[in-house]
Amino acid sequence: MTTGKLFTPATLGNLSLANRTVMAPMTRTFSPKNVPNDLVVDYYRRRAAGGVGLIITEGTYVNHIAASGYDNVPTFYGEEALAGWKKVVDAVHAEGGKIAPQLWHVGAIRKPGAEPGGDTPGYGPSGMAIPGKVTGHEMTKQDIQDVIQAFAQAASDAKRIGFDAIEIHGAHGYLIDQFFWEDTNQRTDEYGGDLAGRSRFAIELVTAVRAAVGEEFPIIFRWSQWKQQNYDARLVETPEQLDEFLTPLAEAGVDIFHCSQRRFWEPEFEGSELNLAGWVKKLTGKPTITVGSVGLNQDFLPEDGTANFKDAETANLDNLHQRIDGEEFDLVAIGRALIANPDWVNKVKEGQSESLVAFDKKQLGQLV
Image 1: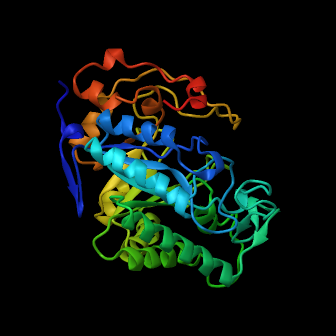
Image 2: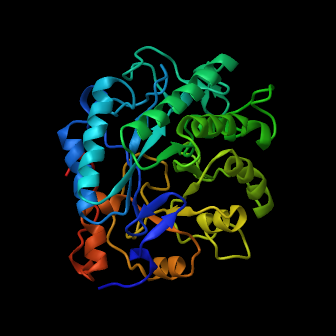
């Protein structure tokens, strides 16, 4: 059996987990008419049965006309969809797992025609999904308040139907990140300007979510330096800037930061081996989740920016164990390795890593 902190229980505020493994949120587009069905229920149940401590669901659309960007992605509103999610929650809990929905708005990345939403254009701080190219709707202050309310309502519904926490998707060039990123936020009002101004939307959103769920319910916030529009993008260049950026979000109500990297082993700043999650934990004092090609020898996309996922072989976990044993971060999110191996956690824990199968991009077309 593999020993070490990764497989020990963790209590992070009001969130108690059997171990420190997390299923990373991964969009699967297997929910016809935007409703999670029995296949989706079993998909998450199997990962809970396979030993995952905390499951974070695929991104789920909040109740805003422009939140959607891809067909067959589940919504997080409406009686039918919420009933589907309740089945997911009950199945995961029956296997002894914990689960949080990822609440999502794609922003200006949306292309008209995706359902729900139909011909609605993409909404963004400046109508830009690609820097410098206005193709969508520049959000008004009323739009901003409408989206904030949609996130708050979704969080309240998540608590009501039995989820253990919620995650706000603030990463990868989607709506919240479009506000953070200077290249897509060219506003001249209080929601633009310097990074403090560009963070105002997220801070107000987190504040509203906190008010909706109360003081005790865990809020996770996912963020990234990189964007799907630009892998080299950076919101902050120094630890000092990182501290200034994240402290207001922590004060607004974030309990756990989910720090998205393409490769978890890469240091974030020169002069230190700490990765992004390590720096965030050091500066904010908040628990952090690391993520980025855990258990695999390749990150997910080619360097040329094409959208073809790469196959990847299993990888040695010694570096990961050393980092979490050293308390650099608190939790570890596993993505594609859990698509390939629903029982990844149990196999690694029991010393059966040799039986793990590689990630094959063909697996993305299956829901098992």
